[in-house]
Amino acid sequence: MYNNEMFIEQFKNKIKEINPRKVFFVCSSEYDRYGYRNALDEAGFESVAFTGFEPCPEISSVKNGVELIRKENCDFMVAVGGGSAIDTAKGIKYYLESDIEILAVPTTAGTGAEVTRFSVLYSNGDKESVNSFDIIPEYQIFDHTTLASLPRFQRIVTSLDALCHSIEALWSVSATDESRAYSIESIDLFNKYFKSYLDDDKSTYEPMMKCSELGGRAINIARTTAPHAMSYKLHKLKGFAHGQAVAICLGYIWKYTKETFDSPEIASMLEQTEKITGFTPDSFISFLNDLGLCTDFEMTPAQFDETVNGVNVERMNNHNVCFNHEDINNIYSSFLKIV
Image 1 (cartoon, rainbow, N blue to C red):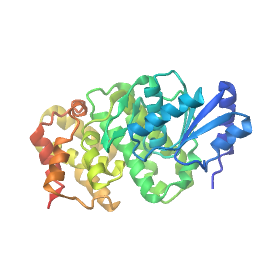
Image 2 (image 1 turned 60 degrees about the horizontal axis):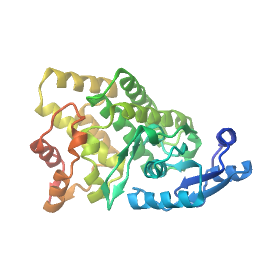
Image 3 (image 1 turned 135 degrees about the vertical axis):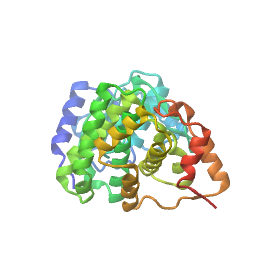
Image 4 (image 1 turned 90 degrees about the vertical axis):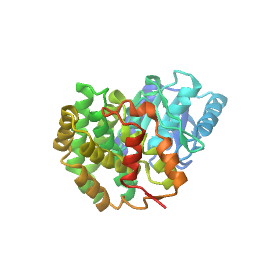
C-alpha cells in the first residue's frame, strides 16, 4: 500500500546522523504500519514504543509518557501519526522540561502539528493546550504515501482543518506578510487538489500534505482565531470531528460577521477572504452541507449554555472582529437547535 522506500531511507539517514542512544517512539499503535519503527531496528537503534494516548490526548496520558521516557532514559523522540501522536510527543517534551529533540512523520494532511508550537491536549475532555516555541519538532519527514490509509471522511475533516488554519490566519490580528503568504499558498493548493484528493487521486497526496504544512506554518505565526475557539464544545458535546466542528463554526462566523458588521476594515477583510478562497459565507456552508457535515445540530439547553460559556476568550482576542457574549450566543443560535 505504501510506496515509501524513499522516505524510509531519508528517515534512516537522518537517524544515523543524529545517532541517538535510545528512541522514544510515539505512535497510535504498537504495530507501525508505515515501517518507521522497523526502520529503527534495521538501522540498529533501540526504541521504546509509547501508544497509551487518546485521539484527543489527555494530559494525564501525556504525563504517563513523561514517566516512561524518564524510566527508559531515552534521548530522542520520533512521532509517527496524525495530530494526536505528534501533539502527544510535543506535550511530553513540554512536561519533561527537556531539550530532547523530536522527529515528526505526519500521516494526515490537516493539522500541521509537525511545524507548530502548539500541543492540543485535554483534561477530562476539556481543551488544555500548551504553547511553546521550544516544542516545535526539529525534524520532519513528509511521507505523503501514508495518506493512502485515510478513509474519505478523515480526508474531508483533516483537509478542512488545514483550510480553516489558513483562513483564520488571514483573519488574525497577529497576521504578518509571511503568514499571509503561507495562508494564500495553502488555500490555493486546497482549491486545486481537494476534490481529486477525495477521489483518491494519488498525485494529490503530496500537494495536500504541503497544504497542511503551510496552514500549520501560518498559524504558528498568526495563531488561530474565533472558529477554533468556538469549535471545542461541539467536538466534546456533539462528537464532531475537529475539522468538522471548526469548519462549521468558521462558516457561520463568516456569515454572521458579513451580516452584522459593516466597517470598511471588516468589509475589506471579508472581500479578500472571498477572493482568495472562492467562497462566500453561504457557498461555504453549502459546500460543508454537500460534504455531509451539517447534521445533528440539536442540543439540550444545558449543552447550549455550556457551549456558549465554554469559549476561550483569550483566543477570541486574536480574532480581528471583537465578539461579545451576545455575538457568540447569536452565532451558535444561527445553526444550533435547542430541544
